[in-house]
Length: 118
Image (cartoon, rainbow, N blue to C red; front, side):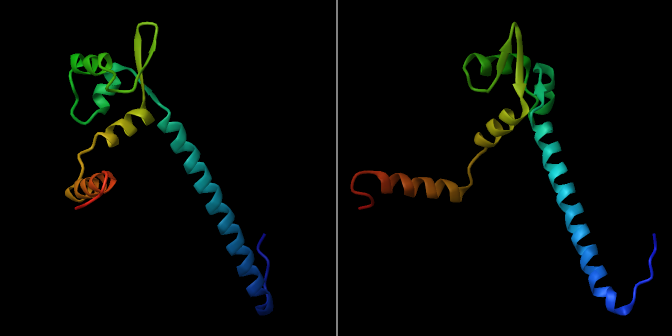
């Protein structure tokens, strides 16, 4: 498959190589995105959820969260199931805000009130 190139053919060959590399890069990135979506849609049972959560809560704690509708879950028959992507969103939603975030929230709250800042 090796072919001898002349000096004049070299720019065209390099351009063709760049195009092929770009195509390969797009294929790799699209495959990576697809595989990440498959991973995010993983379902946990109760024990897997407890192992996944950072603080590894007790089963009774998770049952309390389910009972109070504090955690996203699905129930099939008597089995609780938890979707990884929903749990990740729930964890990030419940993250502690930084001082800057709290200041911005306070400023927005005062600006939304009737009359704004006084």
